[in-house]
Length: 410
Ligand code: ASP
Ligand code: MG
Image (tube, rainbow, N blue to C red):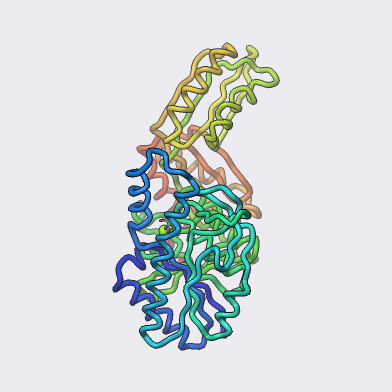
């Protein structure tokens, strides 16, 4: 008898018919003897609709009241789900974040989970109930309702699974059947993976693969919760996200990730002396802009160029901030480029194999793709290239590292 936490997203519970279908699915697992905890998102479009409503009554809605409002989306879906289960003749109980309690910090709109109490959940399970938990919400130390940030229900599910020591956490997706070696829309040869390590998944998620929320993966890794990503609409085998095994290192590259959401800023001829980098980046960091890659070079005349990337939506703000600093420190000029993309190869096998970077660069060179920036970590190599070559680069790397190979993936 296993203890399973299942999470269904907004589209999977988007209509009353779909809620009933999910109830049937959960009951099927329950009938096999598993103890079932179900974490639900709000019905599709609900959260957006609530945000719209808020904006109709206030130009800048109060953050505390916004979370009180947004939490109602998930309150609705868990209540409807539990009613449906009961109507089918089984016991169910809905639970909201504060009832459980899911303790978070006090940052409304993007609260972090600190701790999850398990008494109520375990008691209901002992009473043979199917437990339906509202995703995306918690309770701060003052007793106020908080929400975790958009897409936060994945994190709720993994946090609950960790707290109740579930055998696994199953994340049901309505758009994909698992984790792929790369986006199948870009590379038709992309394959579904059987397994992927937490670390690889974390890299893939932070590099733009949107299948799992990054915080959910971090939680899973920290508490060693096996996460099974699978399809809501079919029983096909999905992908297990698990701790690294020795076998995984045999594969050099597990996946190719990319992001179109990058822009590049270059400051030409910056005086090369202590304090300059901090002077440039401080205003950028202070305005909450996340800098990704940074490249700096030395040159013989005592000045240097600094190039870095920021998310596209922050490009103009960054250009403005940096242009001001550039003037103050006597740099020559600031250049910006929004037509770039980042492509990365990810694999724990890189730790134990040399020459991966070389193969990557050679493969891109053979396609005449110019590399503008490079960054590496233990299990990842990223390059920045011209945006128009992105899809070619993804397909080229997918092939170069043997991911097109029929024996991989499924
Ligand atoms: N309902 C929330 C959202 O739409 C949380 C979630 O779906 O995970 O972002
Ligand atoms: Mg969602």
